[in-house]
Length: 178
Image (cartoon, rainbow, N blue to C red; front, side):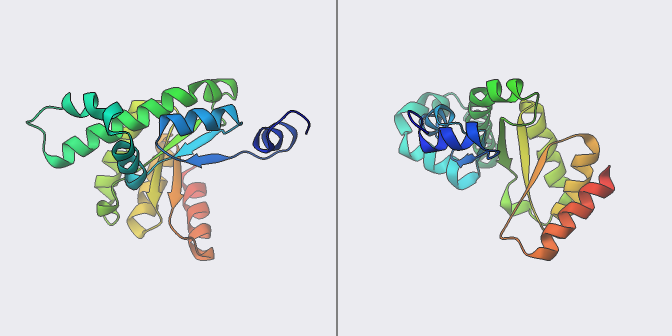
């Protein structure tokens, strides 16, 4: 391991891959330098990043139309943060031919029981960049959405505190979608 950081050694000399929970471009860059192969974001991480680096994001916020609703403004900010991260991970995605290099973008937790709304949001996220994985809740509606997304070729991940039945349901739905 001489000369390598632990994380760089872990990713270069073992089968381990690691993802960082962050929407912060500086953290993402440090992670990439240490062998990180993916990023997961969620509404809290996006908000935390924008608050911690308000000056850096001010021009993005000012560039939003005043005619947008609060929900549309939040969506535009999420898009900017997620696509910034996706661009940073693009070299990993290309080098691994799409096996790694993803950024997870979580659907709005408020719609966790609304399959059609989650599917619309998943399709929108998927259109932003090829290396975005849509994070869906493991709810009944989330499982329906996961199955449809997988059938459409949309990369998805499942999110919640898992129980064994939830993990099995995710696998069954994914298999069924194929």
